[in-house]
Image (tube, rainbow, N blue to C red; front, side, top):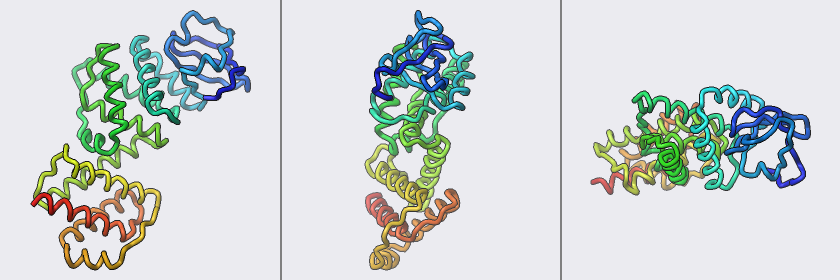
Length: 285
């Protein structure tokens, strides 16, 4: 948000108490979103940039259109809680949030509430992966669910915390929720393979599980970015001869990553993954 106090927006249309269509000084149309922003306002009146501080401006044309299409399906009191939720997320993250969160999270929450009202809550099979991958976003999402609970008396199920956390993470790192979700799914699949190979069940609340999930996540992110890690050659041959089971398993997991991400994986990743798997196998014996 710019700190220029003199900049003003001219109100073109009041969609409801919480959403206005306005015109900026560059003749650009913007959607101003915020709690009570449209209350007792008049068309053609001016709103100063300083008043828009707690609110959010949607500048992207396609985001604006999508958001406007969503509005007729949202009851005013529900929209108020959703806007409060996004304000809460902005406060907690204290940084850049992609404006897409307004459309994506609003759409998701309206869908979730509608399903809940029809007694069709969605289960989230990746909640534990999400919690381990994004603990910070998960805590903020917990607050959002609590806010819904208190302000709207809507009791969102625990699985929703995971979904909301993914939306928060997506807006923070400026990436698509589907991509992030796909990574969580892949990690879940990789962990299942590890459990099958070692014939163990890893405690989902344990620090070992958290470490494993994080390690897999960083590997996936490095592969996605095409980032190379140095290969400690002596360690590679040592691990191969000392821990053939872990070494082979790590390559099996890496092949899955390659096929899913459609990107090459550097050999060094197998070394680090082998060390990780060895640690888990030793602990579980």
